[in-house]
Image 1 (tube, rainbow, N blue to C red):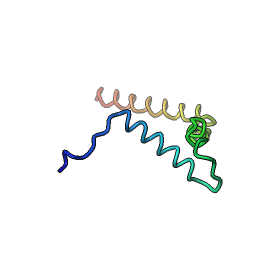
Image 2 (image 1 turned 90 degrees about the vertical axis):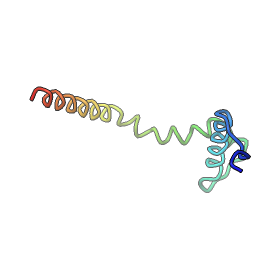
Image 3 (image 1 turned 135 degrees about the vertical axis):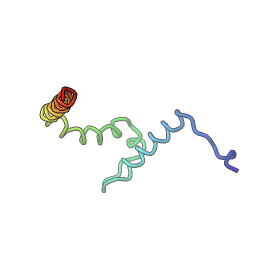
Length: 83
């Protein structure tokens, strides 16, 4: 019975993710755009761009924290190895 289930290839999953993302954008919020506009790449990327805005604003601080954490990790690893 399990062998009768359809199998999906990568291109099928990619298409399903694209359509699912477009439907999510189309159905979220109060205002509805026509489906053709929701299937446009700019509609899909608009939500990603707004989520990335805080990362762009605080990118240098995030980078500095990451570099500091990596430096502390390697410093402790070297000290532990010398003991």
